[in-house]
Amino acid sequence: MQALNLKEEEKLKKAIATTILAGLMTMNTSPIFAIDDIQKSTATPKQFKSMVKKNKKVNNDYKYAYINIDWWENFNDDNLNSYIAKAIENNYDLKMATLAVEEYYQQTRAQFASELPSAAIGYAPNLVKMPGSTSTEGAFAAPALVQYEVDIFLKNRDKTKSVKKLWEGSKFDERGAYISIASAVGTTYLNIVKLDKIIELQEEIVQDRKEIYDLMLLRHNEGITSTADTVRANKAYVSGNSDLIELKKQREKLLHQMCVLIGESPENANTLARTPLDELDFTGVIPAEISSEVIIQRPDYMKAEKMVEKAGIDVRVAKKEFLPTISLSGFALFNAANFGSTFTTKNMLAAIGGFGLLPLFTGGARIANLRIKKAEYERILQNYYKTNLTAIQEVNDSLVSIRMDRQKMTETKKQADLEKADFGYNKQRYEQGTISKLDLIQVKENVLVMDKLVATNKVECLVDYIGLYKAVGSKL
Image (cartoon, rainbow, N blue to C red; front, side, top):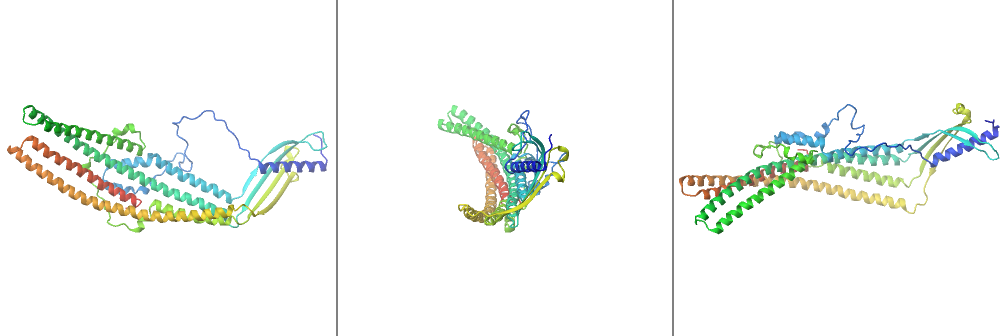
């Protein structure tokens, strides 16, 4: 390589420095990797390192705290507790809610990066042909660039606070999702148990109606019973079968729903164990009144509060958009004709500077943005007030349902006891020969119908308890 005189060498350095600096300002490069094969859809994607540590099991204690697992122990049902635990571990809606928290956390970190300086380094071997020269010269350049927006008005700090409110709100969404799924599991399970009992009673009703129809048919053949009465008995039998099929259909659908809630295939529906309704006994204490301090701990209420705080910060940021932007930047370039002498002070070109920028005319965009943020704040504030009223309404509705359904349950049990007593009297009459077996079976159906109603009312009361549990955000 021919030696350059001092003047040409200086020109070469300036030309290379200018070219590389312009490239750093206007271009970004990123590596591209080829993927050999596409993973199968059944493969499990990698988890976030912050969520799943290598060779360590994730602690899910906070999830059980979300749902107040001790309250569910009041049902004294190991099967129900097992399904709630499976839902916490396997429910896909809950997994998505947890991942959403991670997404918002990373967004917060990404926004926080705007408060810090940015730095970039590079390496650029190149060939340069100077004007008036017929030869090319090789050179090795190593540029470095540092930029920092001086946040003297704390605009970027406020932007980070705003995004952080979304992250905090997502954690309340996660908690609300766990409470909702636990409530759905409990409600679905209780309805399945109720249908088990009702189907059992309905099968007995169908069996009795079949016996009635057979007796009526025999009497009709002997000329004792009219054709119309026989047809009515047959219609009752067919109707009972139809009701039984409908009940079984409802149970199958609820079993499928339960499988999805606990993260299992609906094909396993028939393997789900449950406790008979007669053995269910809720031993918890349901308060007659709920303190307002409990209501304000609901996840949706607390999230609404965070959104009001975020909207206030967004208004503050919109106001700061009218202030100037002040930035600092620094540039260093090591440039030499051979690689060995690249990183020396003799071959270094450096610069540092700053600037302030104040937009003079943006077509009213900043004013419109400020008004938008103020309107959003008012809308979010109104939603906060609405959330407060909705929370009070749901709690009061739950308390009313509990009180009224308990009273209805008491009256239904009284009516059921009277039907059983009536059946006992008719049974004695049948044994004494004063009424026929046909009459006795017809009276027995009244008892079975009342037992179905008692089962329905019992589960309604239990579901009411779950409704109150959900309305107060599991704080019972």
